[in-house]
Image (cartoon, rainbow, N blue to C red; front, top):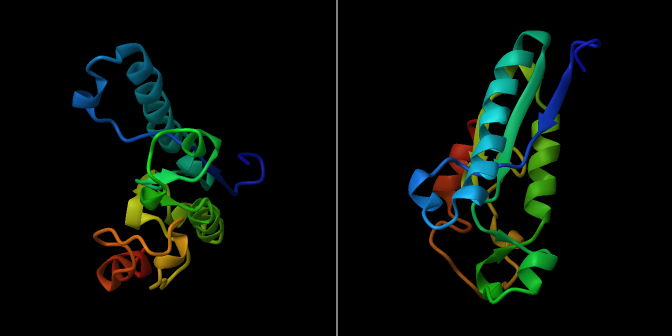
Length: 142
């Protein structure tokens, strides 16, 4: 990517939340380290027109880990939200969109998206902000 002067890197890492480390320090250090690498690398490659984003759904994503857990399906999102976000990110000029932590409704499933209900694993479940037009306005402005 550096040699061609264009590219996108997506790195899945959590937001840094120090109070969340209590009781699980070793795990937290590994996750926070990933996040710091993402921030640092974004700065290192930005002048080469290579962007680095950290998309994170902000909710549980349907996966083997959630399917085999005690988490209720009503709070899950389909993995499609991350795939759609990746496509929207890759469509952008790298120099115009880099070094961001895109969390929850800050993910751009597609420009101008207004219907986030389709990402619910349980179509009957409703959570605050899911499918709201205020969140779609914020996404459309990215």
